[in-house]
Structures are given as C-alpha cells and as structure tokens.
Length: 432
Image (cartoon, rainbow, N blue to C red):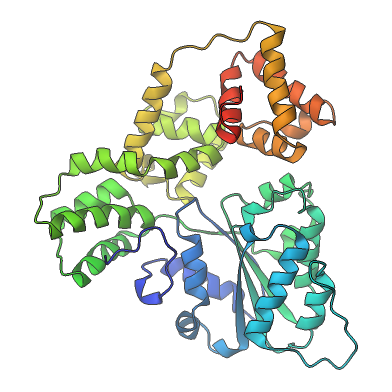
C-alpha cells in the first residue's frame, strides 16, 4: 500500500505539503535567539508527522544554514505520568543525542524516579553552543493531578537560562491559555510570554498539496487516477491529510481490483468508517463550535444564531484554522463531504432522539450527583465542565461534592440534564 494511513510519517519523502508551516517553524526556532512556539491541530491533523518531519536531518539541512548546531528532542507527553518522569525521559534523550557531559564541577544526579529540573539544567549547561529544541507532542495530556501550574513555571524557567540555548515546541489541540487555565495557571503568567504570539496551525492542505498526496502514492503503486477521480476524492475527503489518504486508499484498492469506485457509496461507507475520529473531534469541541458546525452543515444562516458578530467571527476563524471549515466568497462550508455527511447524520440522530423527561425526583438527581462524586476526581470534574462549555471556577463551593451538586443544578435549571448524563456516560460508560 502506497498510502500511509494512521501511523505518523517517518520519512520526508512520504510527507506532503505544510510548506508554509515548515517555513514558519524554522523562521521561529532558527532565528538569532531561540523562541518557543505552539503547534495546534485536531486529532489526525498530522501534528506528530509534522514534528517528525521538521526533526529529520534532511529537512533541517534544507531549512537551516548550520543544522549541526541544532538538536531536536522529541517527547510524547502522553507517556509522561509525572514531572519527574518527564525530566528523566528528557535527560535520557539528551544523552542519546548529545552524549555524556564532561562536567567541571560536582553534580550528583538525583536517583531514578526523582529526576528534577536541576538535573536537566546541570546537564544542558555543558552544551552552551548547541541550540536544543524540545518537541513536546500530545501536550494536552498535562491533565493528571501530578502536573500543576508549577510544571509550566519550571518549563518557562528552563528556557530562560543563559548558560544554554533552549526552545519548546508544544503540539496540542487546546491552545496554551486553555491548558494553562486547566492547571490553575493565571492568564498573566510569564509562561505564555516565551511562546511566539501566533501558533502554527495544522490546517487544511493547499489544493496542489492535496492533489500531490492523492496522485503521487498512487503512481508509485502503479495506479493512475483520472482528473474526475482526483476531484471526487478531494470533494469527499476535504483537505486534511489523514482523510485524503484514507479516501485515496479506498479508491486505490478499487482500481487495483479493477472495480469502478462509486463516490456515493464511498461517501456513506467512509462516513461510517471514520466516525470514531469525528466523535473524538466532537467531544473536544465547545458547545458554540458544535452549534456553528451544525448550522453550516444544515445551510442555516449563521446570523440566526445567538452570538454577537465578534463571537461568531472568532468561532468561524478557529474552525477554519483547524481545517474543519473552508471559506468561499467569505461564506463558510464544511471541509469534505464525508465530514459533512457525519454532521448531518449526527444532527438527524439528535432530532429523532426521543425526548427524555427531566428527572423530577430527588432520588434521580442524587443518582447523577453520586455518579459525579464517586467516579470523577476534582480535576476530572473540571475537565468535564470544560467539555460541556461550563465555567468550573464559577460554580459555588470548593469541595468535590459541592461542585458536583452545582453541576447537577446547572443543567436541571436549564431543563437539559440529558447533556450532563450523556457526558458522564461518554467518559465512564453506562453508570447512570
């Protein structure tokens, strides 16, 4: 199979597009002084592939005048359970890339399992001439109780040491201000100041980039698509790389089997096959983003929605930056008929769902409250509120039982307890 569907791209020859993002990346980290930057994208937008691509020696040689002066260190934050675990993994990767330091002063490294920021700093000070770029993938995973605002403060401190040159590149879905708020970091924290003001979005591919991603792997596998076939694939998939490859791979298999691909059948089949990825997106969207996407999919005027023009413009810009909407004559459209089909089917399921009566008894309300108290810790309740578009901090009370009680009251007062119970079941299964 010529298409790589699912796994991150490891070889630059298999990486298509992202020229603008790559150029910006090297402009930021390759300047006179190291700068940090945030990379944002939805699941399957290609964030990991992008980090692997820019860290490859071939790519670095193409964009940097002196690539040997740089060391890229990739870390998957989802595998780091505690700050100590992070520092230990980072120290191991640094030693693999830079070798063992020859220190001129006494430095007793912390025992395994207790690695600290100081251990990393003491090591890095031995390499003042090398620019270290930390590629921190899956940065969203800083949601466990072990990671607090202190970790982000330490990360900032590590980039500010004058004895070495270090920058951080974070890859996530949520922006850094949202992640910082989850960890209790105030918006005035100096942590945000080390990052380039505007993030690099893994947005939709350009038309020529998407076309190359369809045509080139097929030709390598001995298949040539007609112009109509390329157009069908692009219309169905949109222009996020994973979905382009998944759709093109289906066409490729049909052509190899001497079968004539049916665009309509492919649309329905792929909408079902790719639904788990759309479900992941949907779970992370805010309620306002969901409302706008459903309105665009249903061709409803966005001016009918209860958002101010400024709010609406911000929502549409964000969805466009993530490659979920594209603009034609300033009118937003869903990027890809497969995603559009999933949105319409989801909306239809919601419309056809039987009305669920609001719990009228204290016993039913208590059952939901107990599910929140017994099955979620305080940080997970904060995350649940975020996913539901609620302001956790504004809920009265400080304890977990108090917050759970107010969450139930919030949705009961809005006659929409179904949203809360669905969110609980999404996270914990059918516990209520």
